[in-house]
Length: 194
Image (cartoon, rainbow, N blue to C red):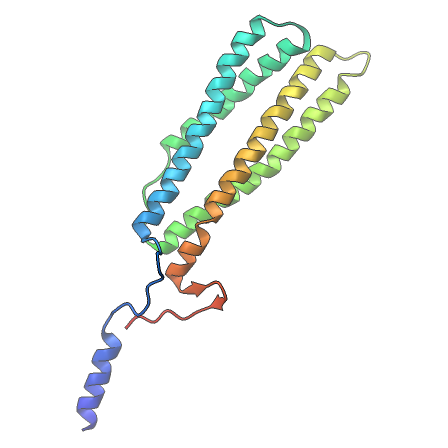
């Protein structure tokens, strides 16, 4: 009698059947598609901002003078770099992760980049404020420093909002990835597969 029970118990332990499926939980394919689409859209927004600033900056630079001319000039210059970042980010975006863990790690990496960039953005704004303050010195090129300072404050402010909004969107997927690992909102759960 022990042998049949042991065999039956062994078969039950080696059978794989999902015990629980969260209601309305996305599949890994859906989650990865959403992650990749979000990152593509973010690079398109950044690229669109850059193209608009380059075009408008060059056009308005020719029609203005003084600090306004320098403001538009810096908008165009600054966004050449943004356009490069957006292009490289778009073109080097990888494929869907093969596992939930790999997808979660990619999502976490994207969030870390966004938070690091948000810190840099604060530095840009502070740098712009410094240039505006420095423009008040009698021996300074006031128009250039004031125009560049205003532009850097604008660009840093946009990038700060861009990074925080994209961080919020990316971090919204954390719970969906966590559900695939068996974690629940109230603590650590146990996901049994048998």
